[in-house]
Every structure is written in structure tokens, then in C-alpha cells.
Image (cartoon, rainbow, N blue to C red):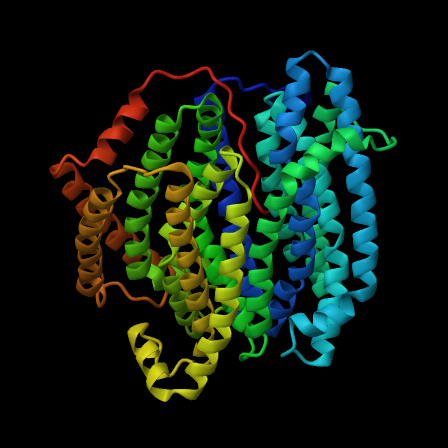
Length: 557
């Protein structure tokens, strides 16, 4: 049995659809485990200071992860590894990987030691609204979690080998084990070690993320050794990765800035913000990440061959489908936001007040879903075209706008009773305490929407006019979705009194029935007009399976 399991884990997947299907299933499993993790945290602590402290403790380690670990990320390394393997230079590939691991380890040790020393000074500025005692707790947890970027970075280095050899099974299981480690920390470490147990659960998850790949790495003979760094080999890696790293760093700085402002709001605001951000990240991963990652190899190949028209056409088709699928998700999330939040998070200490506040934040976040998805696609389009500076500029603009707007909106909300009453009435959260936190996702939504518009305009300037049929796809999807949303809301009104919301089963039943009706109405309307995106989807599902290989990109964990 053990041999059979190891054989399955070490299995090579060579078919495009076979690999993509397995990766999609594992990504969905990881997302579901992430929701289980959030439900356990919500049930145990509610939206209070405990989770504010826990989530704030991730800000510095996450910044380290994207600013150091992404310098030698799997996305950057795979082309260098594949080139050497394709030329039959396996020994050179092994030396190259060992040099990268050596450099990465030295960088991480130096950065981590430096941050370990100065982190008290940083935390005072990251969460200025916390008490001194709470800030000291954030310092303690942050120092523990600082171990995880090193482990995750090493794991992603190894992932460049497992992907190069098409060992997608073992690669796709890593994020699942990461979430399992965090869940173990919630259920078993926290009762014995308190909040530090939660932090050690994160470290355990990162360790599992790494360890599960070691048998395959060892079998392939790529277990790295310490060696002197060959700067001639490493320099091209750094040149390629620096702009991408700075872009990712801007997105992390946005979250640091938003947490900084949110820490000044009522207790539990950081928890509400993070729960809502995590919930809207699920459709973001399933739509935006899926399409952008799937499109990236083709875009790179087309641009390299000089097929500019096909390159733009591929971008156009991906953009159409991204917006087409994003719009109904946005509408249904808006209508069913309270039911979604209550079913996923509503247990234990997570009461109806927390549900209503988190649902309102989710509603604001999902307004930017299409923009976020398009940003993911266009950034990869720029990378495929070898232009890495423009995404960095757009991310910098988003950083400045979002951080400034968050402060302005929170100040206006707290000083203008008319603005506060209008927002609370619109989102149906009157008399709910702590509603100022809604301004944080609003600032994010405005900022990322501006980023998406800028990238779209700049992309057309830099690569040419994209004739996509995007307006038609948007109009058809929006029209059908609005009618489907009305149908879903009507179902909620009709069955509201017959199915009570006092139990999770009642909430689930209401939301499920309304959602199914909404989806059916949307599907019927789109089929009745022979919508092009639906036709293309049918054609792609019945198309003969390709035998190409796929090299997916790992995102932030």
C-alpha cells in the first residue's frame, strides 16, 4: 500500500488536460481547506482582538515571502531549468539549483535575523491602534511565522524541479498540506500553547509544504548541496525576477497600509477585513488565476514567434471569458452575500453581527472581481511580451491610490453622518457597530479598478488594439446576471418565512435554492441568445485532448 501511494505521488502527468484537471481539483481542494481553516478560526474567536493579532502577525512575514522568496520563485526558475534539461545538461541544472538554493538561504538568513531584531519597531508602525500588550503579542507571533517564508521559499525552489519533470501530483499536494498544518495548529496546538500554537501551525504547514516534495527531489537526484555562488549563472535570474518581485511587493505593501489604518478602527476590524478578503479570493482563484495561468505559456510562445495578431487575439478571448464569468459571480455574491458568509463562517463565536459586517465587506470586494481578474491576465501578458516595468508602475499607482483613499474614506465616514447613514442603509447594516471598516475594501476596490483600467489602456498602447468583443460579452453577461440576480432575490423573499435562518441548514437551504434558480435563469437567457462564450466553452470541452505539457504558476499561499 505504501509503495502504491509513493508511486501515485511520483507519477508523471504528460497530457495538458490531465495535468490541468488534476491541478484544478487540487487547487479547489486547497481553497476548500482554506475555508475550513477560516471557519475554525471564526468559530473559536469570532471577530475580536485575538484574530486581529493573528492576522496582523502575517504582514511582515508575507512581505518577506514576496520580496525575497519570489526573487527565485518557481515561475522565474522553470525556464532556466528546462533550458538546461532540454540540452541534456542535467548536471549543470543540478549545480545551478544548488547555487540558487545557497544564495536564497544566505539572503533569507540575513533578512530574517535583521527583521527578528527590528520587528518590534516595525510592528508599532504596522498596528499603531493596538495596545502595547497586543503589539508585543504580534511581535512574538511574527517572529515565529518568520520561519515559514524560508521553508516555503525552499519548497518553491524544489517545485521548479517537480514541475520540470511533470510531477504535478506531488506539486499540487503541497498547498493542501500547508492548510492542513494550519488546521492542526488551530485544533491541537492552540489548546496547549495559546496564540503561539496558531503561529507554530503556520510553520508546520510550511514544513509539510516542503517535506512532501523531498522524496521526489531525492529520487530525481536534485537534492541541492551548498556551493559557491556562480554570479554569471544567477545574474539572469535576478534581472528577470526583480521587476516581478517589486510588483508583488507593492501588492503586499497595500495590505500592510490597509492593516495599519484598520488597526485604528474598532476591535475586530482586521478580522472582518481578512475574512472578506479571503472569501472573495476563492472566485478570484477559480476564474482569474485559472485563465491567466493557462494563457501564459501560449502568450509567451506566440509573442516569441512574432505572431502579434494571434497574441492579441488570445488576450482578447481570455479577457472576454474572464469578464463573462466574473459578472454573474459578482451579482450572485452581492445577492447571497449574507448566506455565503453565514454558511462558511457562521459558527461558535461568529455571530450575526459579525456575519452582516463581513457580508457587507464581501459585497464591496466582489465589485472589483472583474478588475482583479483582468489585472492578473494583463500582467502575465506583459511578462509574456518581456515588458516588466509597466505592471510595476501600475502596482505603484494602485498602492498610492488605495492607501490614500483608505485614510480619506475612513476619515469622511467617521465625520460625515450623512455618508455613514447612506452607506449603512445601502448595505443593510444600520446600527451594526464598527461599520467604518467597510471603507477599507471600498478603497481597495477603487484602487484595483483604476489599476485595471490603466493596464488595459497601456496594454493597447504597447501591444496594439485588442479587438475582443468585450463590450458584447459584458453586456450579455451583465443583462443575464441582473435578471438572474433578481430571480435569486425573489426566491429569498418567497421562502424567507417558511425556511428560518436560525440554523445553518436553513441558511444553506435558502442560499442554495436561490443560487440554483439564479444560475438556471442566467443559463437559459444566455443559451437563448446563443451566447458566443457558452458556444466556445462547449467546443473546448469536446475538443480532442492535447498531449502538450503544462507548467502552472504557484501563487501566494
